[in-house]
Length: 297
Ligand code: ZN
Image (tube, rainbow, N blue to C red; front, side):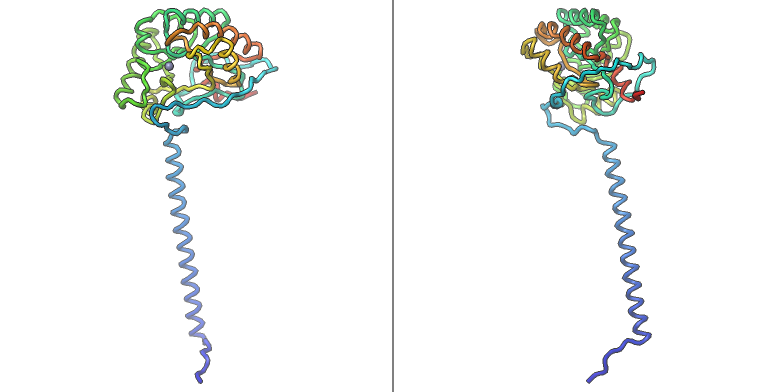
């Protein structure tokens, strides 16, 4: 029979050292895991900062506008900032809408200037005291510079909608840059002011398109609501659909060029008067962006 192995002081020391070693090992393991975790978190947050808030789409597809919003009547009178001389800096993410706490609407017109319809749109805007934003196609600016000058001198914002309206997601970096730069130059030559807002044709964009726009100091502007007025769906349809998208800070898309725009022209006064009656104020995209950070008093 062997004597039971009763641990003495030496045995206790061994056990104690072993426990200490284990505690130290667990401590070091925890420290290592914390370090690894913080490195991972830090790189993830850096990646988040570097990436766009909108994921890239596959070529040829367009971003869907948001779901239908209810018309937001405002009982309070609109107390919105006056025009500023210093504007908000370029946004490095695509803009779909403005400040949702302010009863502001930005009307935007794409694909002009058109020698027949744009002057009619301009006359209606002037008649109702409304300022809007025109996303003009570069080669048409070259063809109809006087219309673009009127857009600008009436207080509207003239913006970049590429030179020839291609789907930019199919183009190389150089070709995208050329589309944007040539349009920048013709607008600057025509009205003496460099445009700062850009809308990709068809709303089609990927990270290359957005990066090129940002490199050229453009804020990319999309939209909240559109009535597909370019499909000639009827005046009532255009009015009804546009009004469904209306909410505070909405960017509404209409077309003054690219085809027959008689229905858009007919719908415009109805849209304007309805929204004015609901207490909305019409602003340019510049004003909309400036007011993004406006606090409510
Ligand atoms: Zn367009």
